[in-house]
Every structure is written in C-alpha cells, then in structure tokens.
Amino acid sequence: MTGEPGAKRTPQERADGQDDLFGLEGREREESLAWMREHLSLMRESAYGQRVYYWIFGVAIVVGLAVHVGGFLLRSSATTEPVVLAGDVLYSLGFALWTGVVVAIFVQIWPDTKKRQFKRALDAYEAAVGRQGRVRAGRAPDRAGAEQG
Image 1: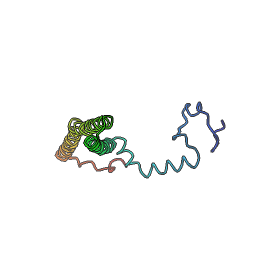
Image 2: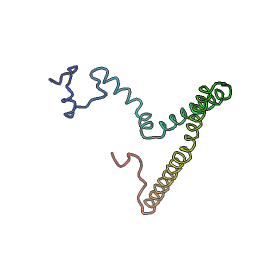
Image 3: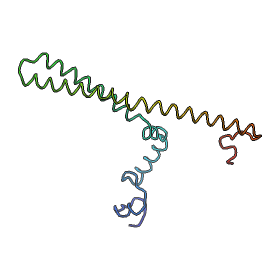
Image 4: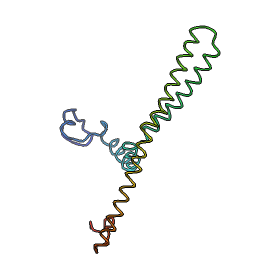
C-alpha cells in the first residue's frame, strides 16, 4: 500500500520488515507504545522474572486445596456410589495438584532463587574487587556515565 498513516497494510507488507504491535495501527498503536514505555520495568520483570511462576503456583495451590477439601466433603457425605466416586476423583486430583506445586517449589523455584542470590553476590564481589584493583593501580573507579560523556 502507500505507507500513509492509517492505511491498512497487508500481511505481506507486515512480514517485509514493517514493525507491527499486535496488529494495532494509528492512535491505538501510539497509546499502546506510550503505556509500554511507562510500564517497561514491570513488563521486563514479568517477562524475565519469576512472577508468572509465582502466580501460577499460587492459583494452583488455592485451587488444589479447594478441590481437595471439596472432594473430601463430597466423599464423606455422599451415600450413592457415583457421588462417592466423584468425591474420590476430586479428592485425588486436588491432592495431586497442590502437592505437585509444593514439590515443584522445592525442586525448581527455591534452588533457582538461591542460584540468583549467589550470582548477584558473586557479581557484587567481582565488581568490588575490580574497583579496588583500579584504585590501587592509580585509576579512579568508573562512575555510571562519567566516562561516557
């Protein structure tokens, strides 16, 4: 097409290298970009951090415990076989869900968190040792942006 603002682009034109933000154009696109600029640090933290895991695990524990308790109550109060079976299934599924989350936290999330803590501590140590080495050699330590100007 012509490339004018507001002109509809074909999928081929978008694939040819023109940037596309969720298929938005014009004012919607500019508003979305402005919102993303304002919330960039939160978006990076969500994209690269563990926040998504924490939310999913939190919801899974709550749902798993609720289904587990509901299955137990249904199983213990039911008198007919199909309802008892449904209670057993819910009880087992709820138990499996929340205990699976607990296991995943202890096997995956907690060790990864500790690794990140150790990595940050090592990075801080190496940065401090590097600054001390430069000071001893007669050079002033680098300051953020001081030598880039």
